[in-house]
Length: 255
Image (cartoon, rainbow, N blue to C red; front, side):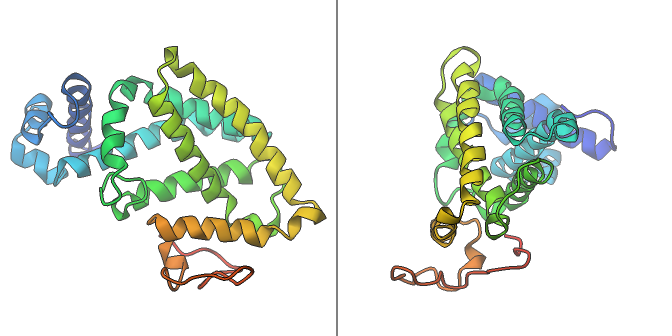
C-alpha cells in the first residue's frame, strides 16, 4: 500500500498490508498479532513496537485508506467546483478505495458499532482520522461554488461527515455487484444536500437554523464527537432554549 519512506515507515506499512491480507483470508477475530508479524516477516515484538494492539493496527489501516482516498480525490477537488459533482466524486472514490475490503467490512462494523470500542469512528482513538475526514468535507465545501449560510458554515462539514457515515453503513450492507447500489445512492443524496443548503438561504427557512444546529448538538451528546462543545451533557432542554455551552461564532475547538 505504501512505497518509499524510511525503514520504519516501510515496516509499518508491511505490517498493515499483512494484516489486511489476513483479515481477508481469516477474518478479523481469527487474526492474531503473532500471525500478522509472521506474515510481515517481522518479530512479534517489532509488530507491537509499531502497534500496541490489533485495534491500534486498525487505526493504522484507517489512516492508510484515508490517505489513499485523499490522493484519489485531489485532482477532482482541484478542478471541479460544482458541489454535487464534488460530493459524488468523493463518495465514489471512497467506495473504490475500500472495494478490496468489502468482504470483511461487516466484521469491522461489528466492532466499530460497539459504543466503547476504540474502533468506533466516534471514539477518542479515532479522533485524528475523524478530524481529517471532517476536514476533507470542509474542503469539499470550501472549493465549491455553493454558498453556505454563515450560521451553518461551521456545522455543515461535520453534518456531511455524519451523513457519509450513514452511506458507509449502507455500503457495508450492499451486496450488489461492485456495490453499485452505493454508487447510485451517493448520486441520489448529493443533489438533496445541494438543495438543502440552497433552501437554508431562504428567509422562510432561516428561522429553523437554530433548530437544525440544536439537532446536531443532540447528536454530539450521544456520540463522542464534539462532546466538549456542550457544558452539561445531562441537561434537559425546553423548547426554544439555547443548547448548553453552544458556541455561536469563532472556530470550533478540536475534539
